[in-house]
Every structure is written in structure tokens, then in C-alpha cells.
Length: 102
Image (cartoon, rainbow, N blue to C red; front, side, top):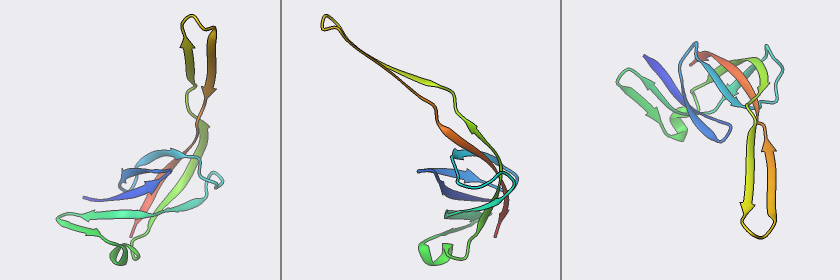
């Protein structure tokens, strides 16, 4: 089985051909192709890592859709001081399908 470890949105993801992966928002249109930088390639017993070897490795993915994550509510409170703070956050996400690992 061939798989690669790629850097995507500040995290590392283990991907193989055909996988659907949710990443931080990628500046590309739906249906277009993006390249993901590979950190490691595993092909059976052979493991490829290191900058000079990975310069030949290409991981291509097709952008399926853009979406938003679930809402996260952050609340801070201190007793007896009248301090209350409420903040929300919702991540911008992109779903991609890995099409090729060369």
C-alpha cells in the first residue's frame, strides 16, 4: 500500500489515493487541482524522506467543496468581579480528494 504524509494547513495528514481529506481553507476553486507538499512517502517496505528525495514526490488532490466547521463558543467568567466574555469561532474548511501520488 502506498501512502504519503503531507503538510496541510499547519497539520500533517496521512493520505493515499482516493482519500477524502478536510483541510483548512485552500485558495482554489471547486473542481481545480492542488499540490500538497510531501514530508514522507511509504511504498510497501520502502520509506522515502529527506528534502532531496521528496523533491521528486508529487501529491495531487482535487478540490471537492468549501464549507465551514461547527461553531465553537468560548466563554470566560470570573466570579464576584462582573467579568464575562463570550466569543465564537467557525473554521473555513476545504474538502479535497487525493487523485495521485507520484
